[in-house]
Image (cartoon, rainbow, N blue to C red; front, side, top):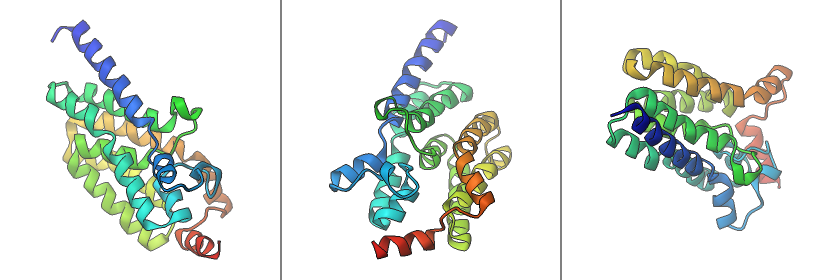
Length: 207
């Protein structure tokens, strides 16, 4: 494929990926159920962990499926077009940037954990499933979504060396974005102020 054609194809798919990513599952799911915007309560993050804190497991699962699934259209086209790994990674990054900085939500997006899982599931399924298992185990043991998310993000590049060498640099870029999006959570963890899932569930029941 000539370079100009490749660059144009990647640019169009990345734009499509960004627009798909900018559809925030937490906001759409809560609007569908007639509930307040999750960006106005709890951790103020439009992600499945905040929806879990505020509204329970069913809506959190719907949010997770929405945010993970929105990577599929653009990446399915990217893989079907036979794009190289780096180009598929650029398209995948478009999904994460759209979720993190959505243009029609005043650039107020989420932490891109579920979206990153969806992108990895399309590009490197084994890495995605391993990171998901790590997240679930840590969330169950330490009861803090931020710790589980950061650990999973750091595991992903290491797992890709073993399971998906062609995508190592792509996965590193994804992991860096997720970690950067968690800077505020890292600061809260350092101060001992990060809300655990157990505390959040208790608070939700009290409300």
